[in-house]
Amino acid sequence: MIEKVIETNAVKITGKVVSEKEFSHEMYGEGFYSFKIEIPRLSEQVDVLPVTVSERLLVGMELKKEDHVTVEGQLRSYNRYINGNNKLILTVFARDVYKPEDEEFQELMKKPNEIFLDGYICKKPVYRTTPFGREITDLLVAVNRPYNKSDYIPCIAWGRNARFCEKLRIGDHIKLWGRIQSREYQKKFEDGSVDNKVAYEVSLSKLEYVEDDNNRDNEENETENE
Image 1 (cartoon, rainbow, N blue to C red):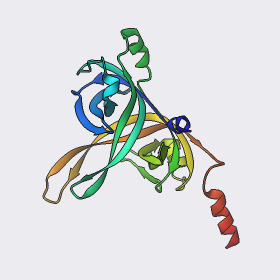
Image 2 (cartoon, rainbow, N blue to C red):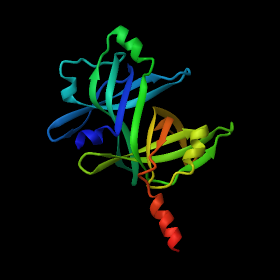
Image 3 (cartoon, helix red, strand yellow):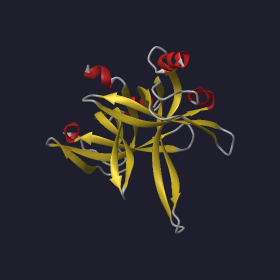
Image 4 (cartoon, helix red, strand yellow):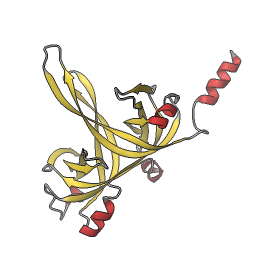
């Protein structure tokens, strides 16, 4: 059963380590470290993503800046209480980390940033257009994991997918494929100060709507009975 749940959230990223690893936390006597990995896009931009890894996976591995690594695992979320507010924190939780040989690295860089999620819409989708006229729909997808926990993953759909996702309802079951991206933005305060921040989200490239597992049949029956 646990293996089936794990299959609902799968990440594989390859890139360059751009920060020193730092101690993150300890759980049940096991230490965890964090570092950041830079992954190029097809454009000249890059995504810089946070990774959390168990000390057990780092045994015998000297992980340092500029190293090329591949990380396989899941995209996890957790809430952190900051300045009186709950903030959703995202990180790639590693199940395997390794340094590929040059030839393998070149092959992996053909698809350096991949994620698959199988979850449920847990917030009403928000459709919008950019100043340049691009269509975007913002989604929040709940993905189950073992021990009755869930990860809440912000996702964005573009163009035709955005128009389809606008019609999704809370409780709808979807499967999606895409990449994890980092996005810099500025938060402005009333005193005129500005705080530079980074958001992480999944950019969809493919979407599958699971028709036989959603809340619509119940809604239709309720409408017919009114």
